[in-house]
Image (cartoon, rainbow, N blue to C red):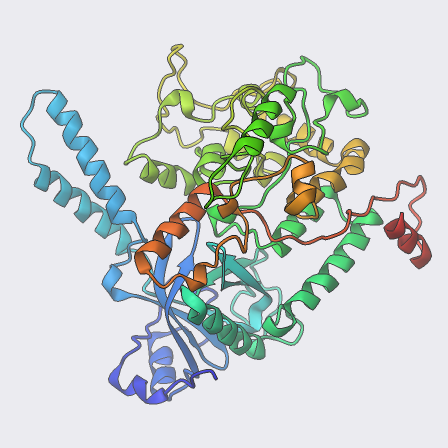
Amino acid sequence: ESEVFDKTKLVSSHFNITASAFACPPDNSSSTLGLMHSAAAGLVERAFENCSQIKCEGTRKCSLLLTATHLILEYDVDTEGLFEGEMMAVHEEAERQKMIEESGGGSVDEEKIRDAMEKRQKEIAALRPQSIRWNLSELSHVYLRRYRLRDSAIELFFIPSGGTSFGGYGLYSPSTSLFIDFGPGYEGVSRRDDAAFAIMKRAPPQSIKQWPDRAAQFLHEQLNRLTIGWVESRISNFDYLLHLNMLAGRSYNDTCQYPVMPWVLSNYKSEEVPDLTDPDNFRDLTKPMGALNPERLQDFIERFNTFADPSIPPFMYGSHYSTNAGVVLHFLVRLHPFAGLHRQLQGGHFDVADRLFASVPRTWDMCTGSSAAEVKELTPEWYCNPAFLKNTNNFKLGTTQDGDVLGDVVLPPWAKGSPEKFIEVMRNALESDICSSMLPDWIDLIFGRKQQGPEAIAAHNVFFYLTYFGSVDVAAIEDEGLRQATELQIAHFGQCPMQLFVRPHVRRVQYVNKKRLSFYQIISAYNS
């Protein structure tokens, strides 16, 4: 039974509800006086403590408060605005700075260096808001989410209306999202479901809601509607894949569960733009990246067949197609906030230049070559955002062993040095008839029947066991140290998306005229 929030807690000012200049969206009651009066009147109806907001920039501890009209996040004062692990990265950077100065022969006051860096970081963190609120009238979508393979999170999407009380279009068109984790253990799962019910009951009736007690039915209905739209060619391949990623729990807020997109082209060396009607210019989407090189695949199969660890199931690939450091931060290292996150992982500096993402042709060769560690897929930016290919921020990325100074990403010859041209060709390749005909096979590998079990083994699509949901019951781990170690491993190895399909994915109907398909044509497409 869910615990009812005791409004008398407000008398002791347990929740310090204050207005924020960062409040999103602003409305008529955004003044400090209005918020304080709301609190004093006891309008906070539900409260969930010990939560975490998950963002690309980092994770912050918070409390989630609900009134009849607003959702409020109040961040823990004790953290001083810092993200989790942020101060540890500062200490590593201070240690590196000390080593640099000592190598120059100078005397070093390590404590002074560390204190100066801590002060600088705390000054930056102090500018972050201590509380933010959202108008529930602008809530458009509510999805249940996993975090570190725990069913303990929720993601909310808002469409800001420029401050109108009852929604509307206003001045703001883009949506904003909020990813909240409710903590470890079965208690976290229960608290998530409790919070989800409370939020959905206060959301507008037209909002899309994934109710906890009807989650499977919700996914089935959404997938049916979405897939029929794709079969009828009313939804592009790019939009379809993005929607599948969203329904499978992938999120731009969590770099460990970033949306996955496929390599489509295989020609990154020709001078002229590849012919998108020639199958030779396309990657074989019926196979995972690790299976594209037959010689390397034999090594993976041998590892799988000879692996003999009683506590770890056999696997083919020790790395994953979508990881935080190896894929997301690797490809997006020239963009904020990913550059800062990359430096945090590297002790305050960029990785060695030879290991940074520097060339599209070289990256393709590595992912299809002999390296056992390179089985990367792509991120959505490869098909929509040329900014990740430019060093617009003028980061000092270093010099390779060959003497090349890293700047913008080296593109295929056919792009003629234009990131915009490169993205245009990649997107056209993704939307081509050849790609459309093979796309169901790739969906089977990533989101469908070939993700796990005997079908995955036959398709040479088996990854380390901690990448799969259900391989270990994280919620049942009572030892805090063991739980944290397991979750760090999960975050490091990558996570497979939620499995959406158990049958072979339907093929897109190819037809010359663009007439709407009849119901019976759609059914026949599913049965073929």
